[in-house]
Image 1 (cartoon, each protein chain N blue to C red):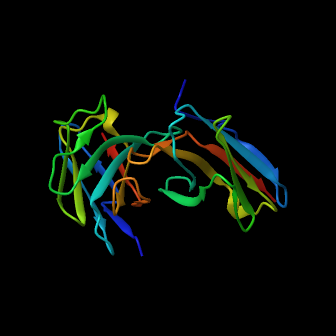
Image 2 (cartoon, chains in turn purple, brown):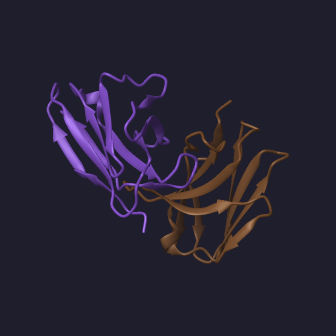
Length: 115
Length: 109
């Protein structure tokens, strides 16, 4: 159990366009989902925490108007990178947790390249 | 001081060797500790939790030293498949996980 999927697994887009990434918990209900970003040779950096049905909590330095997060159901959260720029190219990983503070299960990640 | 610090390595060891990684954390209120494994261009996967009394899972042993605020991971009889980046992770309970940058291990035939 505890499988998390992400879609797409990789995407290439042009600068200025928006990209939506989906994160789904396949076999459990995730009250909390997390979005991370990882640049090459860097650690995972938490971008935001989202609880089902409420607004996401963004980490310092992460623009909430640029990285739109929606957690409309207990099995789905989406991250939309709006007006993407080359510096947004990164590995985006979501994780899901049954309850805040409990074990997180990671999705396989989405590799975004903005040209 | 960074919240979680690890030696980035790489640690290059021959098959069958024993290798140990340490990780220090700065938040004395940290309550939960984990070791994750991340393969190249993949998501992190939980390797093991770290308990105060220390715990072992096969060839892997994790230990926690609260007084000195560090945790360790020992891998015995290294296999080629152990080659990966090992991430030290801490949390203060309800707070999100804080990841170290990872220690890269290469096991060589």
